[in-house]
Structure formats: C-alpha cells, structure tokens
Length: 178
Figure 1 (cartoon, rainbow, N blue to C red):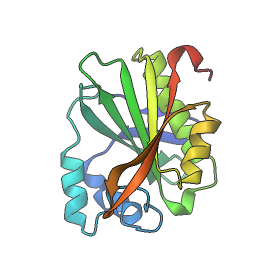
Figure 2 (figure 1 turned 180 degrees about the horizontal axis):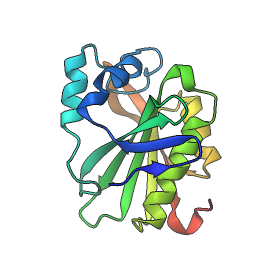
Figure 3 (figure 1 turned 60 degrees about the horizontal axis):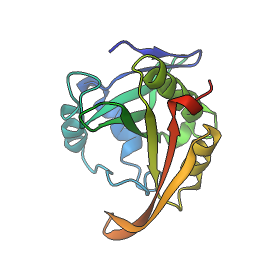
Figure 4 (figure 1 turned 45 degrees about the vertical axis):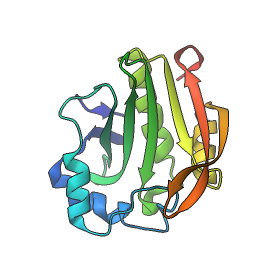
C-alpha cells in the first residue's frame, strides 16, 4: 500500500523499525486506558507489529498504519483498520495518538485522510468506530467526522479486567463529505 499523505502527516504501514516509537506512546497506561492493548515490554510491540498482514485490505484482518508528523518525521500515533467480513465492504477504525500530540487536530486529519482513502480509493460502503462511552475525546472525534451513534451495548467488552460498555458509531460512503 502506498502512503497516505496530507499537508502535515504521512500514514504508512507499521514496520519492525517503528517498535521503539510505537512503544513510547502505546505503553502509556493513562493515555490508553480505554484500550485493551497496553504493552509493558518492547517484545509485546514486536508481536503486535508481526501480526500486521503483509497485504492491505485482507478480509477479517486488522492493519496498522503509523501516523508520522512530516515536519519532525516522528511517529505520533497509529490507525488500526479492521477489514470486516469476506465481502470487504465494511471497515472499523481505531486511532491511538501520543499524548504529546493530542489537541492539535492530528487525529482528525489522519482519520479524515484514511476514511477518504477507504471510501474513494477502495470503494468501502460503511465504516464504524467502537468506543468506550467514557472516552469523550474519541466520541468528539467521531462526531466531528460526522459519524452517527448507532448502538450502545451495555457491559459488552471485557477490557483491563472489567466489563465496559461499547458505543458504535458509523458512517456510509453516501454520507461522507470531505
């Protein structure tokens, strides 16, 4: 897959050489408290990266892209894309951003570019986002991108040794405006 490029950011597939930078923000338990994956060792990141498929857009796979700030060429986060089902028309997105780079619009820019790529280059029909209802920043991000709340599941996910609610947001290609 070619890189997705915006004025400020580059998005490309995660590689083994990214492990230290990815570990630096993924291991922050406070920043990532709503996620099920908070690595404690660099080896866990190596395993995470090794699971990334060799090909983009494979059914029932999660594919990780790193978000790179063009000015510093620093990895500031990542976007996970879950290609849902065998027909390949639906995706789920997840975004993780280093706390040092939050509040600057980077998540919005990266998500918008990824959504645009999925709808306009890969002809996806529907994209969803799954979020903990206490994660206000992610909810605001999805709403800013014009996703609509579709469902609220009570205690449906077991994350960090507790049952948590899950809110699902979605958007259709026909609703997407760049």
